[in-house]
Structures are given as structure tokens and as C-alpha cells.
Image (cartoon, rainbow, N blue to C red; front, side):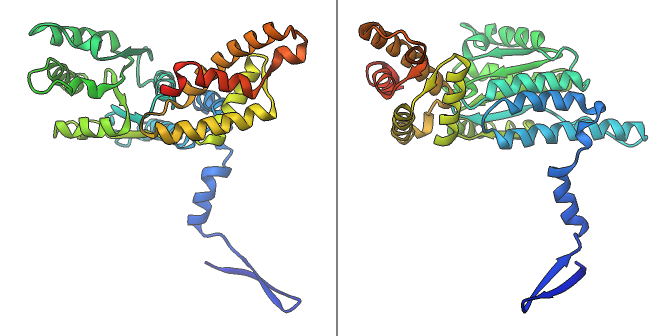
Length: 318
């Protein structure tokens, strides 16, 4: 690191240092305007949609890395360099409401725009869509679902449920069929297995060959209380409602209580959406009984509405 200038002022030495190439590389990740060029419109569109979501900083960086890899592979091909196809099957680990399905849809869209997938559609599935009722039925159902997914993404939520019945359960047949499809048609579709973090970790350990088939494992962390409050304000505004100061304080208390109680399976954005929708119904009953129909009253969600929605429904048990 070179010293570019040195000045004395009031007995202190101020040193201006020239940036090393490593520092410049790090800064380029944040400061570069290269991605604003028209040739990167596929990434800019995905970035624009992701920016609509609160939080997800690690997911936004993940999407940038995927795009950069795909784009640079195209450039390598243009220069006559080797650009081997990377296996793109993924594992998403996270609680409900953390954005797993939404991000899967965006990945499908990006892969289509980048020419990786022909159709870019998303097929959502769960255990019932894959597991049959008799020997041979499961393999048939699973193969049919893979066939529908060709050119797009097969997204299997709560994938660990495929292994919950043990060796004699038909779920194992579904896993084996999926593994074979991943080998035979590994570049024709992308398989994303999703579910709760701990359950997915146990699931992957059940089959020694399974983890290596999913080179990309992405963790979707729980939202912080501040992020969830911002989310609530955003959802309310989209519906022409607002939370008053007391409602925000009540929401903070409810979130703290629920996150501590349900840390392993907290439903994040889903919890906020359900709470807000039930609070709107509670507000409607309150205003009807009060006879208040002014614009300000119709728009305002109060703390009492949130409390009623939480304690007088099954939200406190979810």
C-alpha cells in the first residue's frame, strides 16, 4: 500500500493512502455502474423486483452472483474459452414467509432470460404431488411432474416430508426417482428442494449422495423485528391503511413474544400478512360499533385492533 500524501495540521499527521487493487475490487462490488448498461437488462429487471422486498440482503447478493456467473460464461464462450455447464439444482432452507417461493420464481425468470431454461416456468409441488398409493405409482407420478417441469424449475416445498416414513415409505421411491432425473436431465430442468432449516439438514444427511447433487444451498434467515414492522407498514399502505403509534408499539410487543415462542417455525411475512388482515376485520367491527366512518378512522389501525386479532384468533398459536 503506497503513501500518496502526508500533511501536518495542528500537530497531527493525516495520511492519504492509494487504494490497492484488492480494495478497488471490493469497492467495485458496490460502486460499479457497469450493471446499468442495456446488455444487463435481465439482471436489472430481477434487481428491481427484489428491491421491492424488505430485507433479503444475502439473497440479493446470491442473485447477483448467479447472474455474474452466467454472463461471464457467455463471455468465455465468445472468447473460445471453456464454459462448462454448472449443475444448478438448489436447496432453500428457511422458515415460512421468508421469500423462498418468490425467489424461486425470480430465478426461473432469470434463467429463461439468460437462455439457461427454455420456458422459465415454476412447478410447485409437495409430498402429495410426488408420492403414490402403491408400488410403482410414486415413480410414475414423480416422472410426470419432472416432465412438466422440463425447461423450468420444479420447486418441492417441505421436501423433508419425503423421508418421514422410513425405508418402507413410498417417499423414498420419490427421492430415488428425483435423483435419477437430476442425473439424466440435469441441464433440462432445475430442482429446488425447500423447507425448514433443521429438517432440511437432517433430510440431506439421510442420503449420503444427496448433498453433493445440490451445489447451491441458500439460507433464508428470519426477518428482524424492525424489518417485520417495515413490512407491516408497507402492506398497510398498499391497502390504504396505516398503523398509528400505539399500533406500532403493540406490533413490536407481539412480534417479540411470537418470535421467542416460535423461533424454529416462525412464519415471518406470512404472520404479518395474516395479522394485518385480521386486524382490518377487527377494526371494521370496532368502527361499526362506534359509528365512526371518517376517512381518518377508516384508514387507521389501532393497537386494540392488533391485540384483538392476535389474542382472539388462532394467530397466537400459529
